[in-house]
Image 1: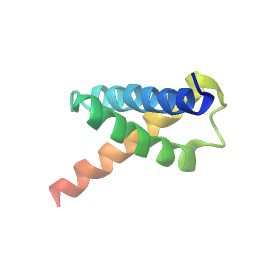
Image 2: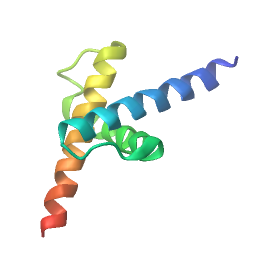
Image 3: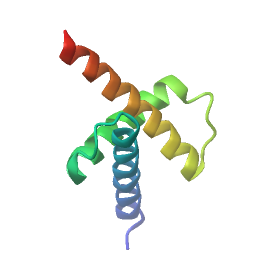
Image 4: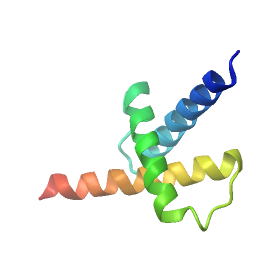
Length: 83
């Protein structure tokens, strides 16, 4: 299997796990596989920007960073829905 394809699959898997975890933390439940992946991927960028200097790398660190970013994303969306 091509290394680039494996990287993309790992990226999507991390996004799905992070999105699912964020949904559980924010009591929003699951958002479906595609929704979890999107929330997790966007969350990974937000988490990297906000927490990248504080959380070390590796698989667990990446999942934690993406999950924290996804929680921030869901919190902002929740606040904006109330406005």
